[in-house]
Image 1 (cartoon, rainbow, N blue to C red):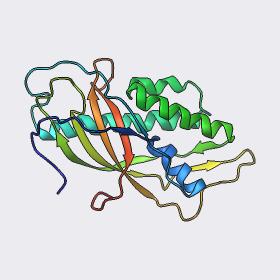
Image 2: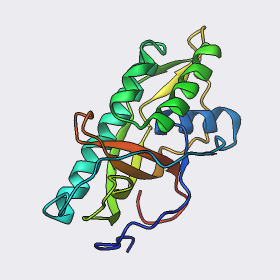
Image 3: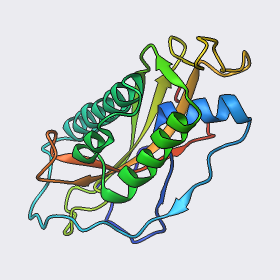
Image 4: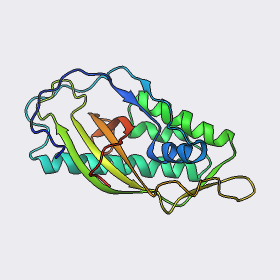
Length: 198
């Protein structure tokens, strides 16, 4: 329903948002969506020929990268925001900066994460197999389950509203990155209001 096969990369505005964990919980606390900001196109590697042999391999690479991104963000928040530079390994500089700002916001509020969010579903939106600059090579939708996680204050009381949804959907773009453990980095991560993912 969402997938566009073998498209040529077309320049378009890019935005970045908080990581799934941070975005969902800031929404749960404040009742408003974190403000998105424009980001320049990140430099990528030059490649010739298809990047992945099949569409399924492209989606799997994106899924593994996104799961690593979510797990890294979770770990940083569980550990009270320590060593936030760990997110640099799996996110572009623009996204990493926004993520770190999100971590710092929670630290300043003296909020601690407990539990673990999980990527439940993934759907390929687009894959550009012959990207020449390594940017926006894959775009996909992810359903993130946060039903088992919470934010607690210094007194151990949860600050998450009871109306918080258990599932949230994100539209995520990926750049090629030779310094990433998965070969990709998250280049944009935005809340998705469409239907059909979770």
